[in-house]
Every structure is written in structure tokens, then in C-alpha cells.
Amino acid sequence: QVQLVESGGGLVQPGGSLRLSCVASGRILSTYAMGWYRQPPGNQRELVATITNDGSPNYADSVKGRFTISSDNAKNTVYLQMNSLKPEDTAVYYCNARVVNSWYQTRDYWGQGTQVTVSS
Image (cartoon, rainbow, N blue to C red):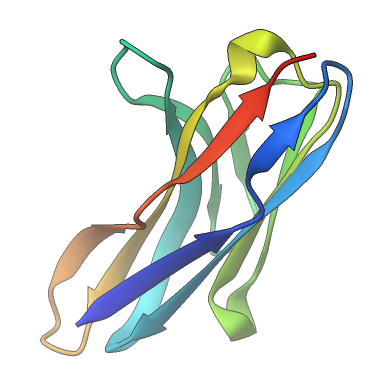
């Protein structure tokens, strides 16, 4: 089995910063990409940012220039540095990893989610 554990969410004022972390563990042979998605209240889950195992990032237009995704492949860890946060960034943030597991299956795995609330 593969597990993803997120940390770093919380309450922050508009204009503030937060850093999310996600560690993947378990029966992982290799990782294609990791990333972050979010689900605002009453809305569907949406892409925030992804990063491939060669370090190529991809961002949603709404977070470009404010958020930075990075990873440590040796630790199967992905980070999301969020700056200049806005109230519309309020959401549950989910970590995602596309991995090859020990059964040689390529699968998407998800974390349990961490709440980010931007409010004064």
C-alpha cells in the first residue's frame, strides 16, 4: 500500500504565507509526478500545481507567481510554498502522487487533505 501524509495547513491572514508538505511512503518503486489539488467550499477539486520527477513544474493560472512547488525525490516529498495568499485560496488541499507500486501498477494516490483558510 501507498500512503500520503500532508502537513502545514492552517489559518492565515490575506497576504500571508504557508508551506505545505507531503510525504509518500509504502510500496513505491518509482514516482512519475507529485502535486497539489484543492477543493474550495462548494466546488470541485481543481489542480494547483504538479511537478514531475525531473523537476518540471506546472501551475494553475490562478496561483502562478504566488505559489512554488518543489520536491525531494530521495524522500518522496513534495512541498508547496504559498505566498500572497488570498481569501479565494481557502480550500482543502490534497496531495497527489502518480507512482509505480510494488505490483508494477501505475496508480494515483491521494492524501487525506489539509485545510487552508485565508481570512482576516
